[in-house]
Length: 321
Image (cartoon, rainbow, N blue to C red; front, side):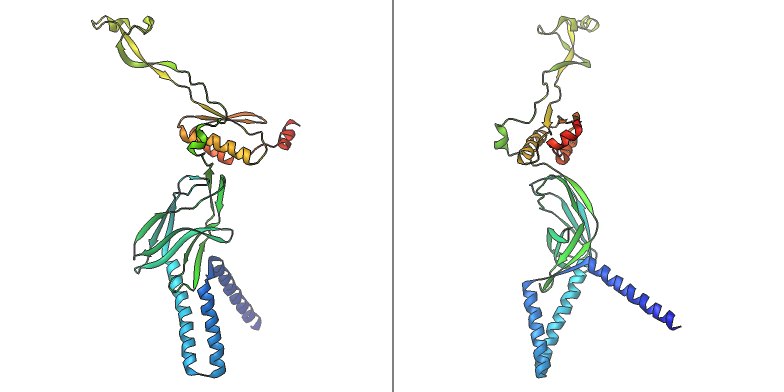
């Protein structure tokens, strides 16, 4: 009987400890400078009240403790009464993102001083701030996060924070929802890109002629007489030829990735990406140790430029071996 009772007690203690650990993992508390002074004052008055036994000091101490409790309850209500959604737009390195942060207040009372951010490596990165959200209201704003490097940007989740009502501390609710996104390279400024040598060579842009089916027009002296349509010309309208239009071959951007990592390679990446930002129809040709690889389309090319890594001399030596 005693053994069963002891097992039950230990099981209850373990569940409480696990619940406390889980709660601690999804809640963070960052005490502000004013909050530290408030806590110091509370402790000092508590010691003074115990030493002197003065009822007035006890009353002041009770009010200070009540303020801490009220602050904790209000901040917990703030971060627990909202629903967060993100609408992510394609990001470019070194430029502010234009993602939309959507916050829905699921309660009937207004919320104040709410902050939404990204949670990454145990750090809160602010994305958007909402000074006031009315009850049952849905609001949205654009984030201005700046991601410095191209490539894959990952995060551990997002977080909701508030310092309401007294600003003693910032309570952070962490929602562990990992994710990642592709960050395209930064384009070069227009002034810098206008006169510089561009990466690779553009493709052959000599125009070719394509006959448009179902379209005819009057014969012009510059037209090839072999293009005259006899059965249409005999109808009394004079010589008629089929309409033609020029075709331009798609340009190509050639990038040699057999380089050493560094600023020079990153500059080549930016030059190549700038061409795709200015052109809707272009192809990317990557010159690698194993040969040439062609990537068609603007989005696919920019994604490849975001993820590409240089092939150093050691890597090329392994391939050759």
